[in-house]
Image (cartoon, rainbow, N blue to C red; front, side, top):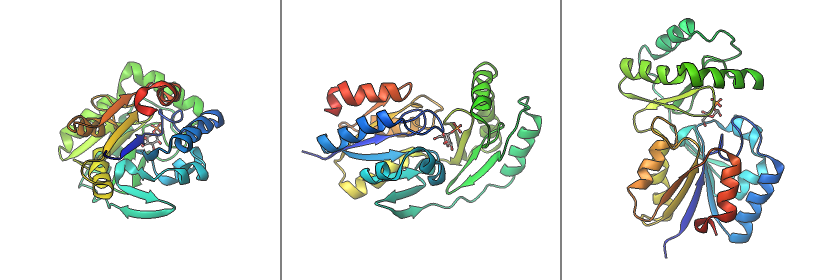
Length: 245
Ligand code: M1P
């Protein structure tokens, strides 16, 4: 019987985007991990600094590992196991700055172009935006579709890059293939080629940053993925879905 691994996105799946996981859900989740002896990996587009603000240390330690920066960095049992380096394509930073200067979204707060290991996170609002500003942008973006426009703008100028919509106010940018899908090979190397994976994410839609991982699992007979709308649905899955028993 092959081993089963449970993979979870964080922002929008275990917590609201950029918010701490609730105590109640964390307790339900950790009970599930312990009582059912589940092997869990976290797979996020975010970086370790932000994740530490959202997920407390003993929760992270209960997991087998944590993939950050869309699988470009991996931590296990308190140690960084690997980290990919990004070679920034010529003209990319200038093109992001041009987009930012021309964005119709005017309220800005903090860093817009965040260089991370193996990827860049870009937001016209800014990484230090208040919760109110984030919510205002999310509503505005639903109508004006700025993030979809950023994806198209960058795809036209930099066809070698992948641009995906993650959380609520930003896009993740990485070289083609350096997306969350890369964790499948890493986990197969660690647990064997026949390992079974069950993934839960809120952006398992074309253009979303969970989509490459869902597509990768789609090709494997024994693996599955779930699209959720938020932490409540994730909780319902682990409490009631047969595959999580
Ligand atoms: O995991 C995807 C993204 O989730 C959040 O995005 P946003 O700020 O747009 O809500 C952040 O954690 C971001 O860093 C991450 O890439």
